[in-house]
Every structure is written in structure tokens, then in C-alpha cells.
Length: 332
Image 1 (cartoon, rainbow, N blue to C red):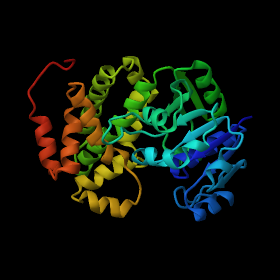
Image 2: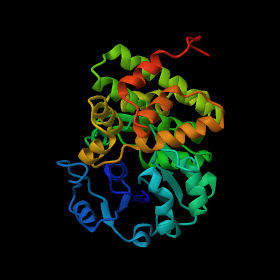
Image 3: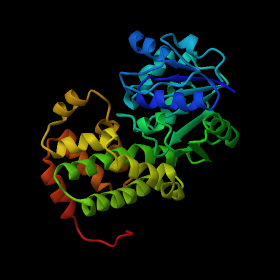
């Protein structure tokens, strides 16, 4: 049994805390809002996961120092674009020898840093102490204890194995990897592809259309990942195609649902006002496009999603432009 801290009381942070508690750990969740902390201490998180009781072994606090006392593993689950600011506020509370686990799936705006790079820079955490958890892990299904698998990626195999041991349950199976770059690129770009698939669904397009976007999206993810140093085999696994399928096809996926609403004619501002939750691909598509351009990588789906989300391009025009691109061999 380990003492584990989770920074972030949203749906995925709470779901991962429930996995850790079910695996026998003592878990402390840090939350920004006292009312949400009070809910968690009462055994629920009705703001993000209504109607689902949390397992015993989870407590919550708004005090970063209290949250990290004696922690051997510290899990970070905040919106990716707020990570640096959060670490500036409470990064000093991170124990100097703890493994720091990132659940975030995004690329930082302005710097094109992956989340592990932000953690290393903003909190002075050695890279071999940073792990990434990624896979087809929709939060509501997780807290309902539906079977799922994930990847724990870390350059230090022993730390990856320790994190995997801490989150292994009869219904949640973690695998280990050393490819932290692949896990992060797959986790970030799949959100953008899910927006595109959602837009197609919102337009009323069928499964052939959606499957085509997913498949070409995987090619896009792989091209970018390899260009920045990832192992291409990662994208054939849970942190690649597994996470991509779940995020693109499930109505529980925020990015998919956000895209559906855009395809139905809502504006970005209207969808944001209605959902009141973070769809990481909306912000990260711009930084992912910047990263791809830095490395000379062709990412047409990301480019078109960015145009639709940030430049006012219509969804109909986005689909038309994707289909009218120059023909080429599939593997090129």
C-alpha cells in the first residue's frame, strides 16, 4: 500500500483516485474548490461523476502541502493549458523523491511542450521521475469498474512498474512502457481527431466516414510521433489506437461530443457555454499544428480542425477540403 496524492478533482482525476483506492492505497485528492472537496470527503463527486459512490480510502483537501504529506506517488490531472500555472502555485509541495504521474493529454500553447516537459521545467522534476498514464480510459466507465487497460510510460522501468502496481485492480490492467513521448503524442493528438469524427457525426455522416477519419488520424499521429522521437509501435497499442478509438467513438468523450455539436451548427462559444467542461483538443489543436510545422510533418486533419475551431471555417468546408486533397499512396 502506498500514500498517493492526486492533484485535480475533475472526472478523470477522481476516477483515477478511485482506481488507486480500490487497489489498496491511501489517496488524498487536492481540489481548488472547498465545496467539491467536501463532496469527495462525503464519498461522492456530484459535480463531475453524479450518482456514483467513491470507494473508501479517498480523502480531499484544498491544501497542497497537506495533500502531498508522505506521498510516494503524485498524480497530476488538471487541464493541460493550466498545468504550468498550477505548478507555479503548488509545485514546491511535490516531494523530492516521489514519482510524478501525468494524466494530462495536451501540448502546451506557445511552447509546444509535452506535459512531461512542462513538469520537468516548471517543477524541476527529473525526467526519470515522471510517468505518463494513457489509454482507452473513459472516466465514467472506470468509476463503474468496467474492465479497461492502460499504459504506464516512464524512462525508469522500476518507477513505471511501481505505478502500475499501485493502480492494478481486477478490472483495471496496466501495462508498462518506456516510450513516454509516444504516450503523450498519442494522447494529445487523438483529441483533435475525435473532434473531427464528432463533426462528421454531427453532419450526419456514417461509419465509413468516421472510420476513414480515425484511420487517417492514426497515420497523422504516427507521423508526428515518430518525428519527435516516439517508438512507432506505441501507436498500435493502448496509448495509440486504443485511446483513439475510445475517444473518437464514445458519447462519453468530451472531444467527440464537442465535435458533434459543432457539426450540428453550434459555435465554439455556444458549445463551451453548454458543456462547461474542458475538451482538450479545442485548445491543443493549435499547439499540435505548431509542433507539426516545426518538424515539417503533414497533419491535414489537425490543420482543418484548427481552422474550424479557431478560424471560423465551416465544418462543411473542412470536410470538403479534406476530401479534395491531392491523391497519394496510403503509406506515404
